[in-house]
Image (cartoon, rainbow, N blue to C red):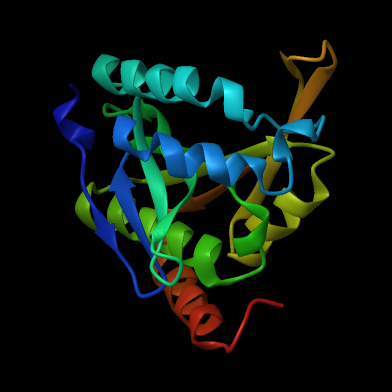
Length: 200
């Protein structure tokens, strides 16, 4: 276990980020069936049948010190509704990536994702003294790109032919980041978004 990023529970008003557990399997299986997000060709969301293996994969990466996986708990629904992680953890450079994130369709365009990003960024900058946090997505995933830009992350560029997707297509990856000097302003912006009645 990498002591720089040890399991932690992050509490918000709308959502809690819980250390990923095998006990979350039933909720996660139910969540992935909402909207059948695994059918989206430009992203990687586990299907119900793949969920147990995905939990084991993330926990094994946690044991290796390269990922800190969370389950997204919706306080209103009183259940786990998705997953997110700190990944590509680089203690020497004090950099991490927020990624491998998905939530069931029913909670999309609510405060859940915004609050989760705020909690993760706050933990990275204020507790772990990060100098930068990256967010990456498929170049053609316009919904994800808009969501990343909306929280205040800045576009760094595109990694051309970055990876091969499960369907055999080659992914160009859009890279965004928030750096430490920007965090105070981004934090205020995120709190303002969370104070609004609903995501828009």
